[in-house]
Length: 252
Image (tube, rainbow, N blue to C red):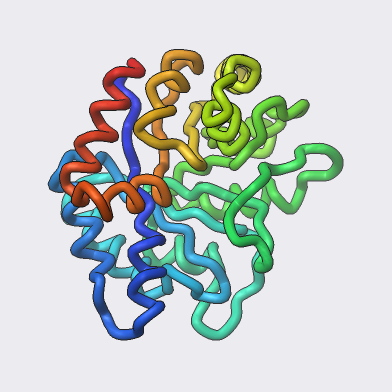
């Protein structure tokens, strides 16, 4: 099965919020990505509403449901609700995304930069995953390549992992990604051996995607936002999505 492309449209909301108002339109941008062939839409609303807001999540859930494509909602399940942010579980309960990707980020992080630590008692994480699965969400956990306890993701009820690919992208840019690809592949195989599906995301782009997908077996989905939206400033959104789909095809 070909690797699916889920486009993260957070950066569209960053641009909109920098000026105020409604432009550029997050839903129209997502629809354009789907028209170009993307198989899903991803957003990562943060409690401080720095980009994607709760109302965007609601609108995108309607769009993706009407188009029959995957909606992937990312977030920290432990971040408390606050004004303008009802909490991750509440957003999932209201929108029922196909996939809930759990990320252990804090408010202070500019972007997600590490995966879950599966050492110690994971009872609270298991409870949050059970709540999401009861809503009909497939649950994926953000993990580091080389995670020593990746098998525990299955123990707590997750169905997939998402490999954090930031270190791979950095190594690729420096011209020597062999060791990081091997580590990603090893982690993927360990996860797959206990029945977990494997997704990947962070700093992937049309240049480094083919090598990554050739080296890491059976990646089900890549979630890409920052690089793709940046490239679209020069090439246009439709052309850029098609370019990324072509890169995925070259990695198959």
